[in-house]
Figure (cartoon, rainbow, N blue to C red):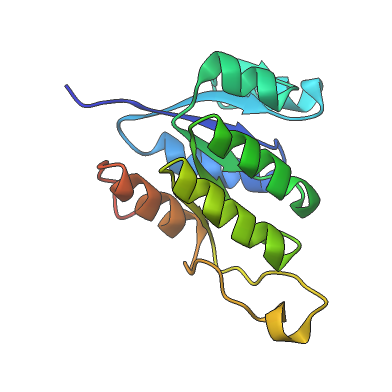
Length: 164
C-alpha cells in the first residue's frame, strides 16, 4: 500500500487555492488541514475544498495534524516564523514567494531544514533585501507552483501527474 502524504495549507488566500487544486490531483496526497488567522476563511476554504480540518492557530494545527508537508501561502512577513515552526515540528515546507524578507532569515531556514533533515522549497524566488548585493540572490528555482509541488513530492517518493 502506498503511503499517504499528509499535507497542510497555512494561509487561505488566492494562492492557497492553486496549491489545493494541484494537490487534489495527486494520488497519495491528503490535504489534512487549512489554517488561517481568520477562522472564517479557514473554515470556508476547508468546506469549499472538502478538507477535514480548519484551524486559526498554526501551533495547534501542527501539533494535532502532524503534517508531513506544510505549504506556507501567507503574506511574506509571516513566512519565516511559520516555515520555522513547521520545520521544528518535523514537516517539510513549501513556501510561496518571497521565501523570506531578509537573506539572513533565508539562511536560518536553510540551516533549520538541514538540522531537522527536512527540505523547503519555493518558486522562482528572489530574496527581498535592501542590500543591493543580496537583492538578486536566487533561492530555489522553479517555474510554477505545480512544478514546485511535483518536485517536492518526488523528493518524498510520490509520482505526480505531468499535468495538474
